[in-house]
Image 1: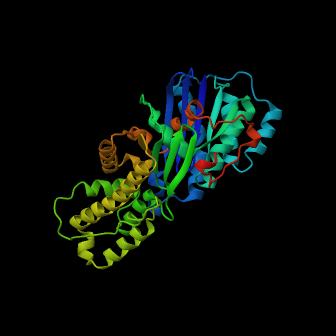
Image 2: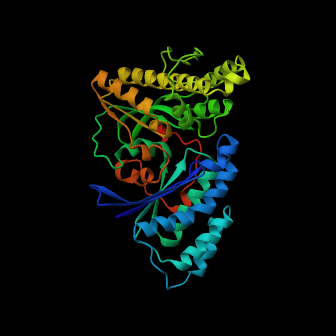
Image 3: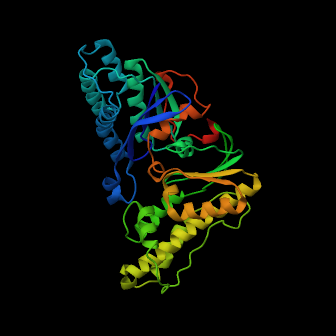
Length: 381
C-alpha cells in the first residue's frame, strides 16, 4: 500500500510518500519547500504570500517526490476532457495550481498511490486550502481514497518516524510550535484530550516576537537558542517572569513575557542593545523562561494524570534545552520520554502520511466532503 501525505498548514510546502504493509512502513520520499527566507522580512508568516508560494511549489515538489520514489512514469493516454473541466472547478480558488496540475496530468500517468492523507487543520486557512484542494483534485481525477487529518496529531505521531517506539498509556503529549502550545492527555492512540493550552501567544510565537523586538531576525527560536548557548558571563543581570508557572492549572500565557522583554530593552542604552553580550544574555533568559514554564506545566500534568510516558512534538521540540529538561523530568519520574528526530520536529508530510496507519480517527469519506478547518481541535477529531 502506498500513501501520499500533503501538508500546507503554514509556510512549509510538504510532500511525502510512504509504503506500508500495515505492520511497518518505509518512507520512500519526504520533501519540504521552506519559505523561511521569504517571510524573514515580515518577522513572521505572511498568509497571502505563503498561499502564493504553496501554489507555485506544490506540483514541482510532488514531481520531485515521485521521482525520488521511482514512481514517475510518462503518460501516453492524454487527458480526460470531462474530468479536466471538473478539476478546474475544484481548483477555482487556485488557478495557477490548476494550470500546473493540468500540465502534470498530461505529462505523467497515475502512480500506484492507494491513499492520500492531507492536513485539514489547524493552521492558516489560505495555506490549508492549497494543500486540501491539491489533494482533492488528485483524489477526484485518479479516483484515490482521501483522508483529512489533524496537523497536531501528526506532530504527536512524528515520534514514530524512523524510530521503533512503544508508548505506555496514559501518556502526556506536549505540542509546542509557532502556532500551538498544548498539553494533551493521551489515553491511547487516537484518543486525546486537551488539558492545558496557551491563552494567547504560542511558545514558538513568543520566540519569534521577542527576537523581532531585539532585531535578531526570523525564525526567532533558532536564533535565540544559538545566542543563548554562547553565554559565558552575567554582566547585565537580566530577570524575566515565568508566566503562570505557579498556578495550579495547566494553561500557558506568553504575551506577558514578550511585554517584559520590551520593557527590559527600554532600560538599556543603544550601545548595550547592540552588544553581543547583551543579546546573548537576554536570549538565554528568554529561552530559560519559556522552557522552564513548558517543563513545569508538563511535569504537573504527568503527576496529575499518573502518566507512564511523556512526549513532545512540534517545531519547538527541536530545542536542545527543552529535550534535555524533559528527559530529566521523565528520568526523575521513572517514565519513558519520547521526542521526534529533529528533522521531523518541524512541519513535514511523513507525519501526515502515517496517521492513517496509527490512528483510529481516520473515517472513510469522499473528496468533495473534505474541507479545511483552521481552528480544528485535537479533542474534536
